[in-house]
Length: 360
Ligand code: GLY
Image (cartoon, rainbow, N blue to C red; front, side, top):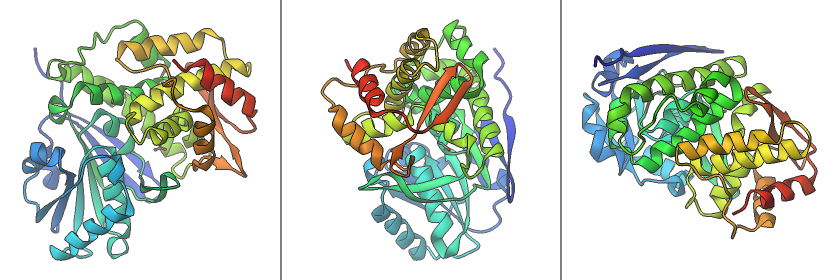
């Protein structure tokens, strides 16, 4: 079977545009394809670095940070700055983020602030970061008060979604990424969601090497949803908030479990809870929750919030989430596949009832 061709999508933002390359063997050509004309430093983590950093040719240095959301902090940013100074990077330098969403968010923030701002390139190596985190310019770190509470909008100069990096990705991480793909179907691509319902992708998630072409097709489609949303609303004044469908519950679940629950897993549980709440409030048919659960199960994602998590604690964490406006938690609710919306003033009783309804 012939491999499908590399693709190039374009994101337009208020200050310009950048390409997203999706395909095979891209990492070897990052410097040339991103038209980097000064020194560049690759920043990665200690999981991805040993697997893929040597594929990016011509770097002045490779900086490795510890792996995991626990390290997405200002302390880690400080260590990145220190190493950039040690390697003599100046304003003409470029940072290349190589890794998942945690690395991309931190490197983007370091690039936004180092020397008051230098260029950066995103090389997402997970499904999750390819379809969501690497596109749209949100960067930042977590704080003890909550996720992503300190950051900046900083657009990359190019994004490279190299399918070959998915070959080494554990199955749980592939599944975790599918939470965002399913979410993008629910937000703005009903055909994509329905194709999962029809099982036409025939995913073999436990062996990503065998389905790289299929993954590329799905990922490109999910990226296009993200592009359409961030182009319309780059600074999250309105529609972009819908990308947080499932995230208000999901972030809280991640945090109260100290990130034992992966981001995609939390989002999957959160999408089920948000559908439950939408039906409870009369916005959607009760069957929608079951449809979402069925698709999530197909890609090996959890659909129940662990029973031992205290709803009061989840609620408290949600209140600290950045999506709180004037003290009220706002939720992204769903009317139907392809029709999600931001809603404030949701009664606390509905929040608690929905959490309890989907615990198990
Ligand atoms: N991940 C949500 C956003 O980029 O807005």
